[in-house]
Length: 121
Length: 109
Image (tube, rainbow over all chains, first blue to last red; front, side, top):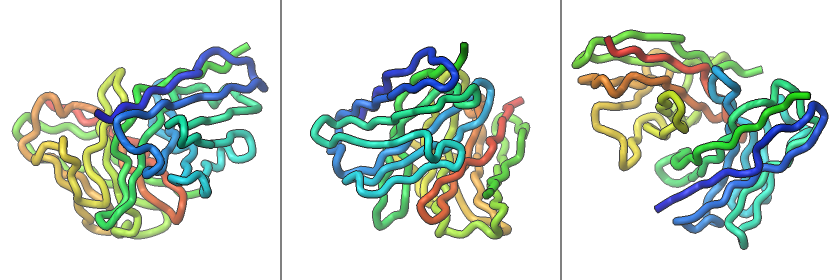
């Protein structure tokens, strides 16, 4: 069974830093791209960042470029999101999602349950 | 800045059919945007429904179908069930970057 479990959320002051983790199990982690998606309270989904299966390619939303860094450790089956210079507008539930690309196209298939990041003084 | 637009809200009767659309500010949506669709119920994580325009995941009920229509990606629900009441989001791919639509709140009434 595919499982994605996020952790690391919590309360952080504006300007502070936080690192989120996403522990993967039930599949060969190193075969898949991985992504972070967030949802501010009462708002829609926002794509945050993605990383290729070997970690060689990353992408970021304009809103987080230069402040967030995505990475992965395929030996630990874990995805990370280092968040810095946090702002009130970064407050959200952060989800990790598995991506796959093949002959039938590109898909986001499995999602974690999310971890809440609160930015407040 | 690329904007992906969905209907803010739609209402459908049980057993009816409804189509949700997903438009891109850059022009017509094609298969190259690999449209994905997700369902989200209150307090839950999103659940994937459709990928690459019209492919169902193994868990997606057959009443959900995806297509391209009139320059937009579309999600059609046929024989709507009360449990289909939820928020629906589309996701489009722009050469390395992904962008979500604003979501459609579907009410079954």
